[in-house]
Length: 237
Length: 237
Image (cartoon, rainbow over all chains, first blue to last red; front, top):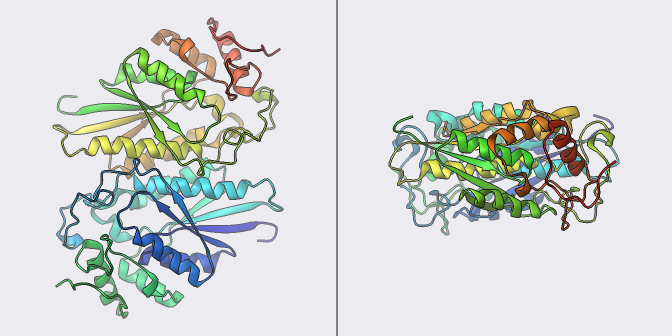
């Protein structure tokens, strides 16, 4: 669009879903920035991998910091709680034990404020509009495992963001209706370097291979019929 | 409701609107907590006044801290930008210069995460549900002065909060359709001690009396026909 400067801000965890969104945003916006949030997650390796994918394409990568008190006390933010070595399918029906209360609402709010500051910059020579990319997908939403990944949440949040920024910022969720293996297939067509992604909830040298998200990663590559370059400490049965 | 433990978390800026919400919440919930957020606002005095109103009723007052980078660079968070000495009516039509990009979306997210942690506490003996009180009102929404105070934003955010917390947390906005003078009238019936509230955007010993929010405060007391105990440095014409 002539006369409008457009920029995408990609909420980047360094995993398969958000990294695929990074590549998709790069195809759809002339200017993109990766945003990761240090919120007290124990799997800090994701920040390092988020940066790797950005660096590979000279994309600016910014880390916003949230006071760790805000999202403390959940399995992913408290070292004392053991991460189960099972698949998502074997977890109890309903909200996942790896859900962090209202995490995505909080992270999206931080990115929105950041994006709107870019739109509002006094020195902006032309009108600006911003997109936020968020990689929630259908398996996250299934069984309400992650309430803050559901289409209902996304619809409400998209409205809150759009209205709350006075139409400066829109939410993009291009993989929200996809299974994880479909995201891998999409990422393949976009040229994603999977070796630069990190999924494991533990924070060890290698992917553990047996936590819920390592298992979901293995299943997704297998179902996508795409070679998984990941070296796992162990392979799930 | 028997068997359900209910608690309200009141987003408290120490001003007229949120303090009235504090009293309203106290009438409607058996247990309440005031939550203020230190987000880098220059008018830090509001935190002190928020605490005063809580202390007066032995209500727990909690301050959550947001990294000041997130909401930096706006008039209310940057000392270098001068706060105008005019009334809201004399500001340009549209978004107020005192709007902080996506501030309320961000603050509500922090309170929601905090409230959901309370709901989720492993040790909770009974099911829990939480309410969040937010004092946005009709004058905030008028002319889109504060996009993140509009009914459209509130509706979207209420949905995002309710769905995103898996129906653990609901948003309450009891003054959203009121003019500020009507809030003063409501507060009077609830017994609010106005001397424990602070409105001024500047952070001096006394209310300045001439910034937009001091003028709105003076007008509201006058139109409500309620005595204003505030000592102002100057009175607006």
